[in-house]
Structures are given as C-alpha cells and as structure tokens.
Image (cartoon, rainbow over all chains, first blue to last red; front, side, top):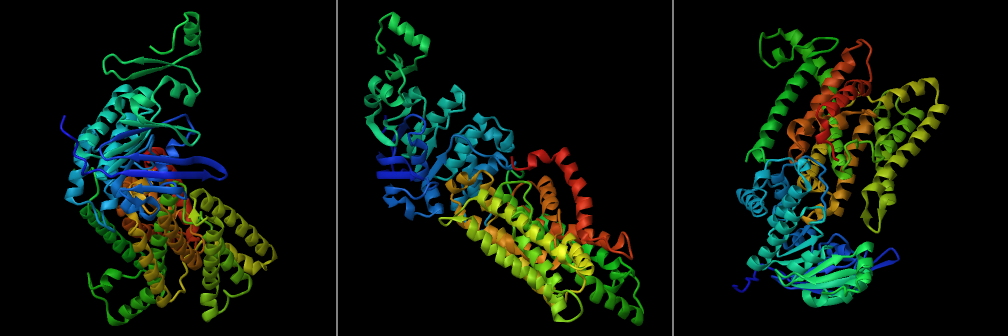
Length: 282
Length: 348
C-alpha cells in the first residue's frame, strides 16, 4: 500500500476542552487529536457529548473552555468563512427548506470560496460536478433536493462537503438513517479521502461494527469525559463497551476482516447466554 | 447544466423583462384616472398634441398622477424585498414585512400624530407630521425589539419572532385605546391610515429620498443573497459552509425593518404585497435569492402600481384603500397558488 499523501489534510487538536450548557456540563476536559489521513471515531451513548464536540470544532457551538485548534489555529479566532475552507461537515440530517437542485446545494459548498455577489465560476461548477461524481450522485444533479430519499440526499450533502475542498471532514452519525448499502458507500468514500488526499476525518457513530471496520483510532466518551482512547482494537473491548453503554453485548471476531464483531444482546439472548453458561466473548 | 444552477445572465434577463413590464405599468397607471392622459403621445409617440392640451396633460401627469404612481412603485418594491428577507431569516413562508414588530411601532406613531391633529390642514406639519411620527415610532421599536431579542450578543430567530408578534399586539392595544378616545373625524382618518393608502400629496423630494434609501437598502440585502440561500438549509448548515450567521441575521433584521418602517410611515399598513409577490416569484423563478431580490424589488413595484390603479379607479370618484385591494386580490390568489403548486415552494 502506498503511503498516504497527507499534504491536503489539517490536524485537529482539542486540549482540555470543556463546555457547559446552562449549568449542565456537556464536555469535561476532552483532549483529542486527529492527524491528516486518519479516520478517528467518537463513540459513546446518547448525551455523552459527541455532537457537541463536533459542533465546537465546526464553529457552530461557541463559548467553549480550553483549546480547540484546526491546523494550529484556535477555532474561536477563525472566522466562519475561513473555517469552512478547512473544515466541512456531514450532519446526520439536513433541513431542506427550499426546492434547490442538488447542483445548487453542492455549489453552496463553494460559498466560503466565493466573494460578495459573485456567481459561481466555471471552476466552481466543475468542482461541484466532480464532487457529485465522487459521491455517485451525478444522476441527481438537476433533481429537487426535497424530493430525494434520505440516502440520495446524504450523498448530495457529502458532495457539498467535498466542494468546500476541506482539509478535515466531520461526520455526525451520517449513516444513521441509511440502509447498509449507503452506509458502506459513505464510509468507503471517507476512507478513500483519508488515504488519497490525506483528509483528516472525525466521525461520531453509533454502529460499533462500522467503527471497528473503518476507524483507525477511537475515543470512547462517557458523560462528557474520554473514558478510553487508542487504536480501534484496543478500545472496542467487551469491558469498555459494556461499561460505557451500560448494556450487554456479545463480542465475536469477524473472520473475514479480523475486526471486532459486536452484537447487542436482547433480553431473550441474555437468558440463553445464562442458560447455556456461555461466555459473552468468543 | 442550464437549469441546474443560476447564472448571472439569467438574473439579468429576468430583471430586464420585469423592468420593461414595470415601465408599461407606469405608463398605463399614468394614463388612467379621472382624466385620461395620453402619455404615449406626450412621449412623442403617435399623434402630437397642440400646445395648450399638451401643457394641461403634462401638469396633470407630473403634479397629480406621477408622484403617486412612483410612490406606489417604490412602496411595492420595498415591501416585497422586506417580505423576501424576513421569510429567509425566519425560514417561514408566512412571514411578511409586518411580522417583526416595527410596523406596530410605526403605525402607533402615525396614529398618535393623527390624534394630535398633525395630519390636518396644510403646510410642513401636515405633510410630515404623520410620516415623521410614524418613522420615529418605527426607529424606537426597532431599537427596543433588538434589545429585547438579543441574548449574550446573539439573536435567536424564535425570540425575534415572538418579540415582534407580542410587540405588535401591544401596539395594537394602544391603537385601540387611541381610537376609543379620538373624535369621529380623527377616527375616520385613523381607520383609513391603518388600512393602507398611497398618498398623493408627497413631494418629489420626499419621494426621491424614499426611492434612494430603499434602493440602497435593497442592494445591501441583495449582497447577502447567497447567505440566504445557504440559510434555507438550516442555520447550522449555513455556518458550516461559512455564513457569518449572527451578522447576517442582525443586518437582515435592521435593513428589512428599515424598509418596512419607511413604507408604513408613508402609506400605513398595505398588506399582502410582501407575502404574495415573493411566493409568486418563487414559483415562477425558483428559490435563489440572487434572482428573487432584484426581481422582487421590481415585481413588487408592478404589483402595487396595478393595485393602486384599481384602488383609485374601481369605485371612482371614490377611492378604495389600496390595502383593501391588495388583500382582496392577493388573498384568493395566494390560496390558489398554495393549492395548485405552492407546496414545493414553501419552506418545509
């Protein structure tokens, strides 16, 4: 495998980042690093602070304590235009308030590169076209964004992120509403971006098996703190997962990939496990 | 990729077409009235007129008709642009120029001036008393609403909306109170003022000033058109593609309120212009604000010039308040649009 070209990526660093919502602490002293070319996962139960962390890095949530830097610069000192040129976001869901075409939506990704009243240049349109091709959405170019299925829409939103020509891409559970085909397509593309362009990717996700397959490293959050961090195989362990998610799982090894295979246990499955006196780890 | 995204050429041609339509409407509205003025002949087209007739027609045109027609045009443009940007700001298709409260303050100011007798008689006070008080009311309420709705220097859309609605209701209560203590004659003036009317006694200087400021404000709002497009995909989405959301929201509130405040000061509450025209244009031309704002400025002018023409000719020699005409025409038309193809073109 050729060594990844990491010139296109930017490093994301948070140091002792804390955030309080009203009087409710959401993040407590969270320190993470994402290097160019890396796919880093943030896992944790609902309310553990994953989304807040991503929103702080993308400049949506302000007023954090500690330090958050992109390419060595403090996020609170970077204007929204400049930040959008180095960090792009693929959210879980996107509002589609007006019937823009998919191409128009992707061109919105050029916003931070354009000046004043300017209309999109040939180059902007070319970049949008390429982005739609990369996410396999060229055939949707002239379709109304409001009429697309969630899977199709997410490809367009991903293309919008690519059109920003970012050095880092933040993904907030981007495949939660998608079927398995779209899930792997989206993350295969993330991997491709990381290894070919050196883009750094930080993704929140719930699907532990996707995390095991795609993430280079993982931060496991619990109640706003980093509970465990490190290489994916070291973090996704039976003990860590059951502790953080407060739920029983059955852990196996995927004999195709050698990666971890995690299966949530229903009440019935737990009973069976107990009855047959089996270990929850194979 | 012609229909996949907007080009500057498309904006230019659509705006030019509408400008030609507006010119035709101005000529029509200048011609029709108690006396038919042959505007085309005056412009040197068709048969020429003899000297005396020519002079008389020119006087009617320039002293009576044109000021009002031009004013209607500017009012229509200003209200439509205010409607477009408030709809973008609130991401709500039902937003109109009057929703954020400034109109309440302006009409309260105007009604107060009428109660004090500042609208009667002749001279500077009668000409500027009502609009002056109304504009003062608009500015004061603008500052007040901004203060109430800001929190830690941030401006949440729900808070502005609620503050505006409550502020309007509060002003309406005060206006009811004033109506209850006004004389019968004052009451008549107040009722007509509130219904919305294009005045025919405003001088060219005032009209010119209003036109200049409205155009400047509309251009400043046009400069934020791409930001409004991005905001249609949600506030967070807009930030993530690089929109300076707090700045855009604040500027939009101020500039849109300025347009509204000026319009209400001059003409009272002319409804439906700022609601119907933006929707109509969205259905015909699509959602891009770079196209909507310039065509809205001109399209709104067309709409109100025609509505005002109806207002002064339908029941001649009596006048119907133009606000009644816009509501009577605009209401059913709006419902028709909504039922036929409007669903796609509303913020959902």
